[in-house]
Length: 529
Ligand code: NOJ
Image (cartoon, rainbow, N blue to C red):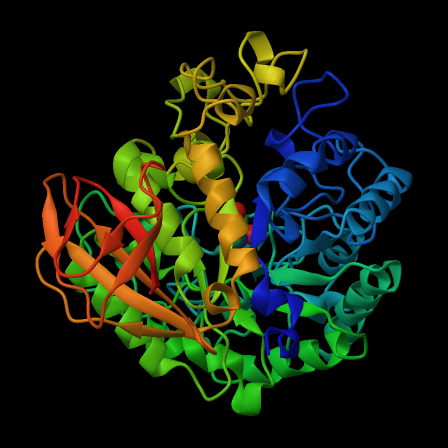
């Protein structure tokens, strides 16, 4: 029965990037009252849970991923009363609310770090990762920072270096220290007590670094045009064996409460990724699977990915899929507008929990950012090689006109040039829009247990076609996706089948008994019988 499954298995997660979703205050930056005012869009769309990127006090060196108070709300976004109102409204509408938890590093302005750096014998010294210079001087080892440069910053006053996997403004907390764990677990309880439904845990595979501080080996595959950070294989700074014990402890905290979820942000090969389910599923319930973002967009490669991922899952491990987020190019830019519809059908019919990135439901694309408007530290650290994340973080396009219904002020990032055409208001009225396609897919997924919890089975295909079935009880669906720009054909097994939904939204009720003809860039969902 589909009732035997948890909400985070049956449901669909929608990521809101708070700075860019809806600005109720008119300062050009999205906020919590704005999100609350737009929740009805999410209900009409048909998603189940909302994940908010960080909303806490922060100097915004990394747009909220540098937190100076884990228990507050940044005034840009509102205050705690706004948060409580948002949570209550979300729950009233039947939506779950998931917060971003950023345990790997705080802001360098966090009182803990200010204390830690104040002297070598401060009780919080060991809350961060301090190290003496190398014997001849200079940083203790060769570790690199994700946004460019070395990962060690020297503190003149105390004569030691501190480690930061990201910006110098984001010192890494020392998760080997039990006091850090206790303090951070209390942060989780603070929000869980308020009633939040879970956390997306930032860079969870980074939490523990090598206790012997060994140099990372060079990456033999590095070439010009890649990030400086990728010159190394991050063997000693990420995915350390001891991290799993920390993840388990974090999970135990969340399990003190009913029906909450932990989603881990993890960029690792499939074989390593699935270890974060933990022994006997004692880790995170959903280690984010970003491989659709990283795999070449063609049917054979995606088929291999689905097969490898399903085969790697531990017994009982629940799959999940992600097509977009605030760190990557938008899907409609990566694969083009037509294939983005195929991608939507894939995401919303694969076995496992989908996560949808705000704006992808209307086909938003990366927005070019003029050099003088670049905000993202990633672009500033490695300029011009396409790693900037501003293009995928631009304001949500609600309607036509200046401000796109997002703001009455000057938006913090430019609004897409095509916002008059690509927006919620226009697309809501169009029977074949990207938004209408998302609503149709989400409604079908919600209605049909075969689509939200059913077994999945990949079929043998050739050329640009990817095909799989989803089945639950007596009900059986077939999904056939044409990844190419030309017509293609597929011979479905054990017909007849009836078309239910095409990505073109114009082809329901055809009986297919024999060869199925697909139009260019078409995805088709069919029901057995
Ligand atoms: C991953 C987040 O998704 C990204 O936006 C952030 O810059 C880094 N972690 C550092 O927190």
